[in-house]
Amino acid sequence: MAGPYPLGMGVSVRAATKSDIPELARVLADAFFDDPVMVWMWPDPKRRRRGLPRLFSVEIRHHHLAGGGAELAEDGDGVIRGAAMWDPPGGWKESTLSSLLSLPGLVRAFGTRLGVGAAVSGTVEDAHPVDPEHWYLATIGTSSTGRGGGYGTALLRSRLDRCDADGIPAYLESSKKDNISYYQRFGFDVTGEIRIPDGGPTLWAMWREPVRVNP
Image 1 (cartoon, rainbow, N blue to C red):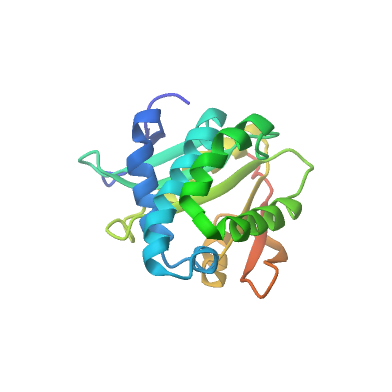
Image 2 (cartoon, rainbow, N blue to C red):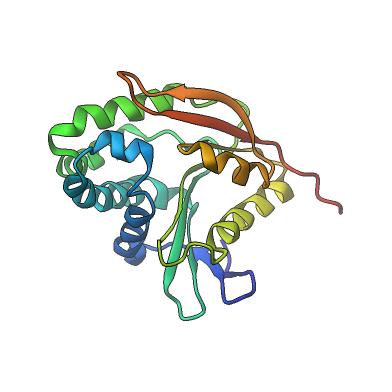
């Protein structure tokens, strides 16, 4: 990606770098602390508070960063307020090497809940559409201090504008029913429900066809 993607009102989006990982992990951990899937994986709030930044750090470092779709949103002072982890067409599934490199960090993140985390990951992966090729929004979140500041919108527009320019669809799973209408404003439609086994929460699969860009 080229330089920062300016969006006005002091909000800008740029590609994440390796040095951003600790802060990105912190921001996403804050954003997802009350997420139904995360609460299911870590019912104990203290363990969740420790585990979430470790999980996001591992995922960013060993998977998302390499695909070129890890982006962050900053305010006018350069403070990171939001992040989006996009995986490129054909690159949404973790490689065997990435999985092996991630395992020690996942053990530290989940502890005795590793099996639960693996079950959630496997269920979501099994439901993932294979064709056509698409950009996958694996994770998007805004810190509690940045909510309402337009950072989520900036992150979505940054990548979706390029999806439209290239004629490529996009896919995500919404883990909160209340967020469905938000994603629908950006052109996503619900295509199905993903139920986590053993009484776990439901996610909503959402697909977006590219919007034709006038030449």
